[in-house]
Image 1 (tube, rainbow, N blue to C red):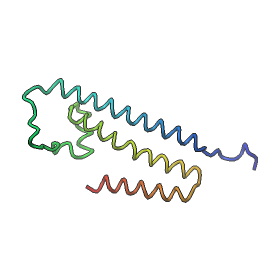
Image 2 (image 1 turned 90 degrees about the vertical axis):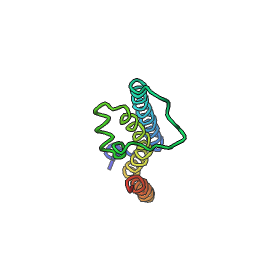
Image 3 (image 1 turned 90 degrees about the horizontal axis):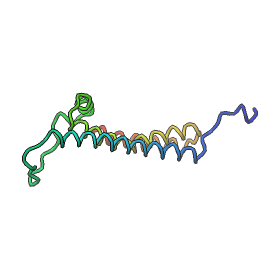
Length: 129
């Protein structure tokens, strides 16, 4: 098989560049979504200052991804802000998933196994409750 007929493999530098761009894009997108949501909150919520002596958790309708997406697409500022935070949390998880793809392309079995384990643990911790 000639060199031109071999499938191209990603170099470490190419993987680092793609992962770096993914992280930059994820953080930038999350920041934009949070700023849009917070701007909406500031524009629509005027009233007495919050009492910070008592902790009040997030509203029940903002505790699931489906509800957050539904609220964000409906234009609710709280849901848009929450969506930005979900995107920020998802960014490093996407990095691990992309790294797994890179190791599969490179056929590096050891790192495929390790990265798959890390991704499984991240997803298990995120989705279990």
